[in-house]
Image (cartoon, rainbow, N blue to C red):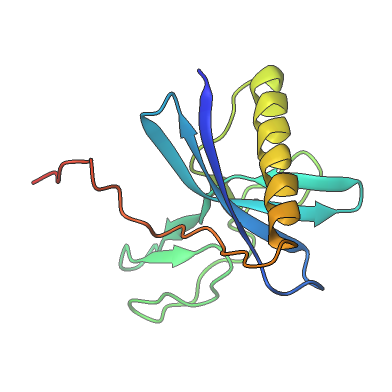
Length: 145
């Protein structure tokens, strides 16, 4: 697998830990969007796209976020502490949609995304800088019907 393109969209709020969003293209054929570049205590890290975890109401079967106290569908009271805990004992409320599955891939991913972020940061200091359009359509991709 080769990372063939990294597109970085810098965030305007300089005080926020979220520094940028990016999209990564693999082998010129597969795109992962909504990757976050976040400033942590030990430097930058990459947060992969994720979704909120949910469960179902015992009474009606309605779907609810794990922090919800009452069912969105029927209003029934939901049990506390429905979320599983991670190895540090914290509630696991989100799960990655896509992520590297080994250390080598994670390092390669982080290195190339970080390099692209630094490059975009340098470009942003130049006169006439125009941010990357992350919503640009892929014109060469046929519609799936």
